[in-house]
Amino acid sequence: MKEPLSLARRTLPPLPALRALEALDRLGSATAVAEELDLTQSAVSRQLKTLEAQLGVTLFLRDRRALRLTPQARDFAATCRDALDRIAQGALALRLDPSGGALHLAILPSFGMRWLVPRLPDFARRHPDVTVNMTTKLRPFAFADAPYDAAIHFGSPDAWPGTRHLRLMPERVRPLAARALLPDGPVSLEALARLPLLHIQTRPDAWKTWFTAQGVDPGPLPGTSFDQFTTILQAAIHGLGIALLPDYLSETDRASGALVPAADSAPMTLGAYHLIWPDDRPASAALTAFRDWLALITEDEDALPR
Image (cartoon, rainbow, N blue to C red):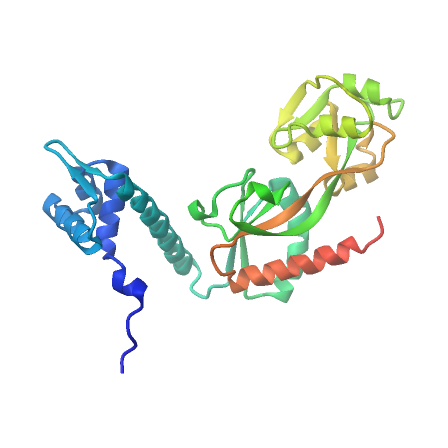
């Protein structure tokens, strides 16, 4: 005996009709829809009429010059667009990795290069069936519009609505400079505020927050800005200014003496890194393995003395 069709399957409109509706909303004319879908205008018209008949609602406002969607139809077209994009992304992922063992990860460049990549060989040994593909993304994005399974983010997870997160590690920063820029060693906070400061574009208030935490109101803090910490690191090493750098990024250069403390202050935490993933879809086996591995290594590293 055949299983009865679910309500969703009984009410699901034909895929070609949904594609025609989405295209009409996006392109604005049946002529453009026919050209994009490689159909005749009459075929497009039939698909749209079929959709309207199946749904039992008016989708179109017809006049002599154009075929326009009702406000409700535009909302439905947006829903169709999201669903069709998800299907297309899933099909692409399947073609690229039929085994389902790939993880598509958006990373922050400096954190990815200096913290994550050196640890990935351990993940590869534990999970040789999982391939981690990485792409640099500096700012939050909508998972529905991007082909990523997860992302690494600095700051509050609230910047990513509709997601879940795993806290990885705090970012401890300290002001550093080339020895030639500070030949007499650390300076007072007031003197530091008058020196050339290097700023990171994704955290424009980092220096002000740091000074405030030291009990100083520095006033305006002009200086050169950069979009990545790796660039700021090189600028600081070459004496361009004072950089507020994360410990994980500056460890080697502090040990070699290429960078020295610019002030007598302890490292300060201004935020934390997180793994972010969408909550509207099941986590894949690859994502689950990667998430569990990150939880394990960050827990072990948090237990180390600092």
